Image (tube, rainbow, N blue to C red; front, side):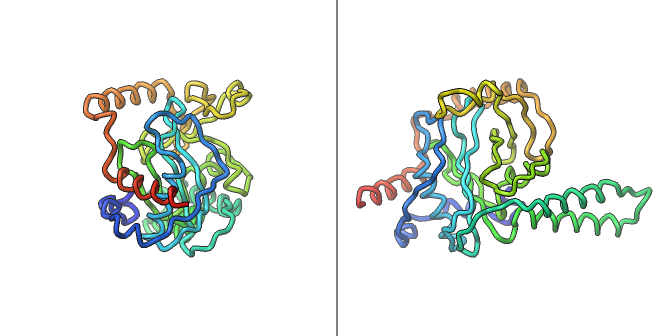
Length: 276
């Protein structure tokens, strides 16, 4: 995703402690509470601190547009997702129903054109219109999204790209939601990697669970669809793949190790909190 947006993940690694000290940490207060929190999971306040610093250092903004989480198969948090307004002016984030319809219409036009019924110029023009409509829907020129790992063992900044998170604008495209507010879109997102995301809807029993602090496991999902394509996915196949990835990780990684960048951020964050 970095390559597609012109960013390089290596640039995120170059943030130094000296640069971070130039800024005062803002107060972190988010309405959402995300569970299950497991041992070695990055706290949301620390993740917000890293996201804010990244947005501030690279884009001169701390105006939060939205924040959300992506989950692992077991319901634990895989990553925190923060979006910021590039003009640094905080305002509500809405998904435009008009722009959703425009994308749908342009996509239908593009897919209807073939070499047999259209010219190359017509197909290129239709594709250009579709891309323009998609960029407008995802607020490509207005926002930046930063994905922060929920694991101390991995790189803090997993991805950074212009536009709002893919799941926010893809959900109304796939599921026909007429809800305008991004905050009211309820489907949760499973993350196998930053490039492989899946919508999943909790089962009825999970929705009525009295324990509101526990995120529903993918085992209880009533459906699962690719965020990239909108197509239904096989839960069992995803579980097998995830198990294989976890086994490989256990062989190659030290489960107690903390990434050096997390050590840096945590030291600065703890010092800020202690000073309050």
